[in-house]
Image (spheres, rainbow, N blue to C red):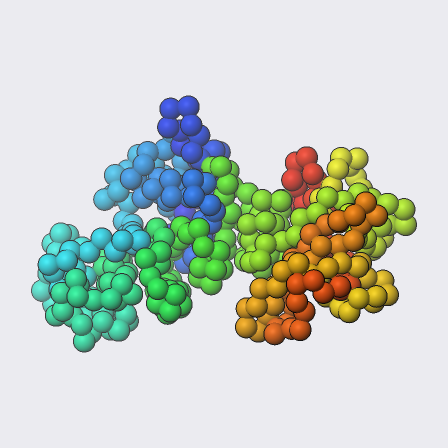
Amino acid sequence: MSSISFVSVSKRYGEVDAVKAFDLSCAPGEMLALLGPSGCGKSTTLKMAAGIESVSSGEIYFGERPVSRLTPGARNIAMVFEDYALYPRMTVWENVAFPLKVRGITGQPAAQRIGEVLQLLGLRQMAEQDVSGLSGGAQQRVAIGRALVRDPEVILFDEPLSHLDADQKVQLRAEIKRLQKLRQVTSILVTHDQTEAIAMADRVAVMNHGVLQQVGAPQDLYERPANLFVANFIGEPPMNLMKAAFAEGGRVAGDGWGATLAPSRLGALRASDSAIVAGLRPEHIAVRPAGTAGDAPGTVIYREPRGDADVLTVVLVSPTGEGARLVAEIAGPSSWRAGDKVSVGIDEARLLIFDATSGRNREALP
């Protein structure tokens, strides 16, 4: 096992900064996900770790060893790609054996390692089949086996599940996680799918425009997003983000709603005079019958049934007319329909306050 460290790593293409002053560490045996939208720099970061892309500045370490000037072959890494990158005219056994063959490992030592990997992946019975006839999920398991068989220091996963059906994704997510923990191999996963990142990774690093936004355990990112980008990107449905202002008596008020914050929170939240944005997860909003005391009045304008949950879009009533538009996730199936008058309750303890100018969570650490 080896750790991976990016120290002030940047990548420039002419005048474009694809990755900017990137500092991040992946502990030995950890699965770390790089998560973000297309073009955020996550794949470029992975390619720099692999040696496929050069580093413009900074350094990458595997353990204590700087690797930025080493060729890909000298880094003892393995990659698993989204398009499998298998040899279609070879069998499952031959594909898994190929990395050993090019390193001159043959005979019984190779056969034993290949057999162990095929057994781990449930591919023993397919060993003599051509990979071209396998399902996408089975082909990706072969690709994972080819990565594992060479006993690499690091495995880099580049969108490994993008081409799979939903049921195959669920199965392979669990399989990759199981194998990664069983073999204790340090791994970095690149994905734009937050479900994939949360299900597979020990920690998630969120990127945007080449800049690391936040890194932490999935639950930390969900409950304590560092800024507006992370708050909006993590979670489905996304967090409600609403213009707000401080009022008398420890109140935060928006267009048609208000909440009272605990006195212990107010000091950090009011440290700046700049405008604020309030954030609240859809599941922290209650929808109750119209006229419920203490709630904000509103009207349901859309209901999206999701089986055991309903997602409601509610427009609040404001003194000026139409107020804030909130998305609430409630237990389903519910009886609410578009046009229903309702009352909306806010879980005040869960309300987050962001700086409208910087986007920073005012209660997050600097």
